[in-house]
Length: 453
Image (cartoon, rainbow, N blue to C red; front, side):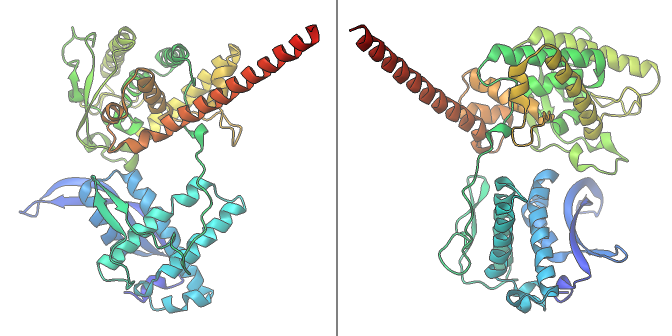
C-alpha cells in the first residue's frame, strides 16, 4: 500500500463521504456526511479511500462531529501537498527521490520544499497572504499524526497539543533556524473582509438591515424571516436552513396567537431528515452542534411581523399541496421542499443585487463603499454578511468578547478578533488624522497671528 501512495498516475482528491454510525447490534443509528480523501486514477477515475489520510481525519474530525467545511479547510491543503510530492517524485526532483517507496519516508524537508514553493507563488501574486498561511497548520497537524502513529520518523517529541478545547501548535519545524526553515512573509490582515453596512453609524446599519428585509418580504418571501434570524441572531445560512418548526423554543410555532412579541429562541442542530436525496449535503450541516440561539430584542416588532407573514407563506404552500416534509421551517415556494443552502444562497444573492440597485438609486455612497472589496473592486455580498453585521451590532451594544463568543456560539474569541482589529485600526487612523488637523490648525493660527503682528 505504501508503494502505491506515490504512483504518478493517481491524484489525492477530497470528496463528500456518507459515514454510517452503528450501534452494538450492528444497526445504523445515524448517517453523517464527512469530508474524505480518495486516491483517484487519472485515466478512468477508479479510486480507493486513502487509509492514512482518512485515519487522520477520523481521529481528529469525524469522531468529534466537526463541520464539513472545517474538515475541508484541513484536508484540502494536505491533498495539495501530497499531490505536489507525487509530482516531484515523477519529475525526479533530488530532494524527493527518497519518497519513491511511499509516504512512510516523508520528512520535514519535503513539506519545507512545498511551503517555500507556495511562498514563491505568493511573491509572484498567484496567491494571497491568507491562502499561504492557511496551508501551514494543516500540514503540521498531519505530520503530528504521522509521527504519533509511527508512520514517519522525525526527532521531535510532539508538534501539537490539546489545550483549552482545541489543538495548538507547540513546535513548528518550519519556523526554526535550520535547513527546514520557511521564510514566510508577514501575515497581512485584510480588514475589508470584515464587511458591514457601516463602520461607525449604528442607525445606518439598522436602516440597511430593514431595507434588505423589506425587499425580501416583497420579492423573496422564502428567506425574509431567515434574514431576520441571521441579522438579529447571527445564525449562519447552513444553521438557518436546518431549523425545523420544533426548533422554535420561543415562540411556539404551533401557537397561532404567539408571533414572537416576547422574543425568539431556537435550538440549532443538524436535521439531516430535511435533505434526504440531496447529493451535496455538507453545506446543509450546522457548524456547532446542539446550541441555543436567541434573537436580539432590537426591532422585535419588525421581526414579529415578518414571522407572522412567514407562517402565512407556509400556509399558502400547504394549501397548494406542495409540502413534502412538514418538519421544516423554511421551504422553496415553487417546489414545496425544505429550503437548501444552495437555494437560499441563490435567493440571497439575487436579493443582494436588488439591494445594491436601491443603494445606487439612493446615491448611498457610504454603504456602497463599505460593501466594496477594494482588492477586486467588486461589490460582493455573501450571506455571511449577516453574521458580520450581527457581530458589529453586539460590539456597538457594549457586549464583552466573552459575551459575544457565547452569542455567536463560537468555540473561542479568536473568530471575532478581526472585528476588533478593524475597529482598533480605524480608531488609530482617526487619532492620527485628528492630531494632524490640530497641528495644522495650530500652525495656521500661529502663522496668521505673526502676520497680524
